[in-house]
Image (tube, rainbow, N blue to C red; front, side):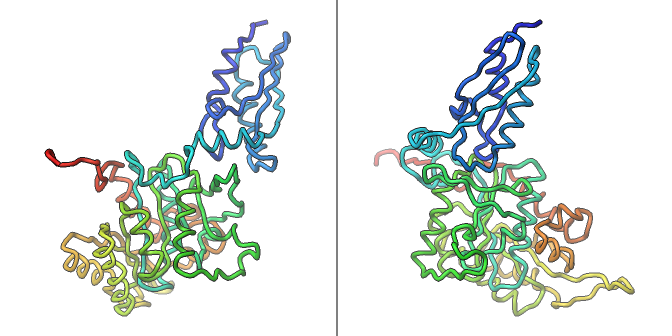
Length: 378
């Protein structure tokens, strides 16, 4: 029988990541003990962050698989325990530091931040944001999504997120769906989905700030924010809390909707943000009988917004895509299965995929970031 070394087991455990924190268990000090019997049976004791950890079965499976693959191991038993308050505090400080801060403004943070905006409601902004987030995750990117529409949050349903964040010493570990980490106002309402949120401006700002500072996002490639329609408190707070955020403006082909969307993009002049492009949603769709395109909501809205913002902002603001009207896009949102997952070859999904290609093609970097340099002699 091959002798099993403790080093071999430790190396195997170092490959096991916590599903929520996405860091190795060994690095997080979650390994309580390891015992190896002469017969090759290995018992691993694990510290869970909280007693009701929703990932307990996933952690058990990952540990069992990794340790069971070590040569000579004849069996694996995983025993779960729960961290003490002191251990949770130490873990939180390890991940977030002694004081919580908005990591997206930290020196060296290169996460690409995109706030999806619209002038008015009903243009399909949230559906597009949810599908875009999943499309980016499908490209291997690490993606976070903030449902910044505090009053009208809808992202949890559209992505099928039913779990509340795990709370570790005040640090929130966001649930994940379709590869996207999600935070929303929904799990913080005792009354559930039907409870209204009656917040004035300062409370909206505070809620958004907590989504950025209290949540452990890890190292994200892209952070998307689904903004409420218009140019109100949340849009202004995003400009203040996330000055590097870029805007993606959504409109429909209807001129009346396009004119309002222009105003949403023009807010960038006051917040000193960049508008990366425009998406025209609910564009023409083929007649189910003859195949001819039907313009339910008119034509030209996306081009109007693109041309107007390019002229007014003095920077190229391209029309990135025209997403055709498609019932399955709405159905996927109601069912919690985005269209880019359920029918990636549909015309609407392909249009959203083209937006994801555009975003993914621009690598993370220091563009727009303050480097802390001061002119010589000052």
